[in-house]
Each structure stands twice: as structure tokens, then as C-alpha cells.
Length: 151
Image (cartoon, rainbow, N blue to C red):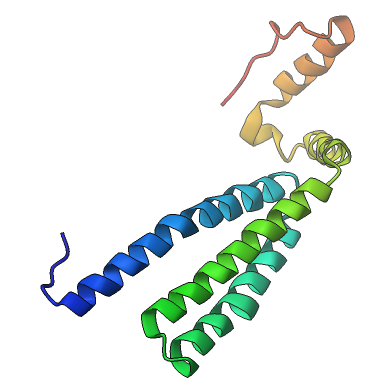
């Protein structure tokens, strides 16, 4: 329920709700794609795209439409949607161009280095568990019965 009887407020609210219904596609796409980019170690790309889309494209577009073209709320929201749409398209393109196999190998190497240094041992498992994992890899590729997790 809208807490106003003003027809102008209701009309703007209806317009914004319709715009947001369409914008949710771009919003969720940018959210998922940027999260995947962060997960594969390309958080700097996601951050750069976010800054460009929101602060270089979205806000100036909203300012121009909202104030200079006197579209006010609808203009500002349009600018935000333009920024979100740019973010969705750019993060999707960035994710498609990432070599996921190479990134997974890099992440594996980083994790192994940290495990050797004992950095991850306290958070994932005890040092005994890591040694047990190494021994189980030598004996059988799929045998993980001997691992004692200390979580």
C-alpha cells in the first residue's frame, strides 16, 4: 500500500515500479557476474566495472536526465538503470573472456602455497589433516577416509 492519495505521487510510483521490474534483470545479472568474477580471482575487474558503470555512467546520466532535462525522479532512476545495465553487460563480457581453467590452476597453486606455509591450516583443517590428505593422494586418488577435520 502506498501511503499517499496524491495522484501525481501514485503515477510516479507506478512508473518507477515498472522501471524497477525491468531493471531487476540487469541488477541480478551484474550481481551474479561480479560475484563470479570475484570468485575466480578477478575482483579488480569487477570493481573497475562497478566504478565506471555507477559513478562515470549512471550518476552523471541520472543527473543530466533528472535536472537538466527536468525528468526529476524518473530521470535519476533512468541513470541508475543505465549504469546497472552497463555493469551487467560489461561483467558478462569480462567473465566470458576469462580463461577459467587457467584461473582455477592459479587459485589451486595459491591455496597449496598457503597450506604449505600453514596459513590455511588453522581455518580449514589441522596440520595432521593436511598430511593425511597428502598421504591419501599417494595411495588412492579417491580415498579420503583417513582425513580428520578439525573445523
